[in-house]
Image 1 (cartoon, one colour):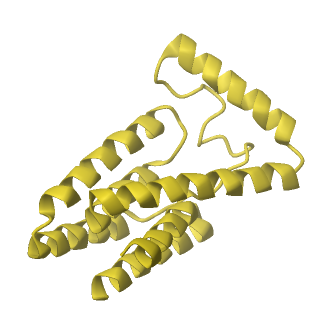
Image 2 (cartoon, one colour):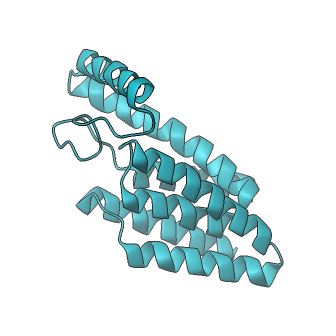
Length: 167
């Protein structure tokens, strides 16, 4: 119960920071990562925690390299891996991806930019095909003119779902 509360507080804090500032502080991610490793070391599931963190970091770094997410998101995904362990982390990220997609769909529909967004997706896919795993030169997470959703919120939704349903 205490572990679930710690994980929930971390996820909500990251979501609030991401909503307010569009960044997730490094100290918060480091604290979550460290707490996760400590909790799993005590419970005897350190390997699961380390695997989830490593896989999360690798996947996050790939998305960072192509300009899809920011550096704080990469560290958040790794910290959640440390806190949740591999099986729970996988579920949390699946729900987070669905939540992020739903949030994005609502945003582009509300802002009436669905067609432009579809064209941008095609341009990004073409760029990935031609240039490999490199960020599109103009359509990326640093482009403030594109519709952007705080992934910390989606990650919190996935994490809270996992903590409530799967634990």
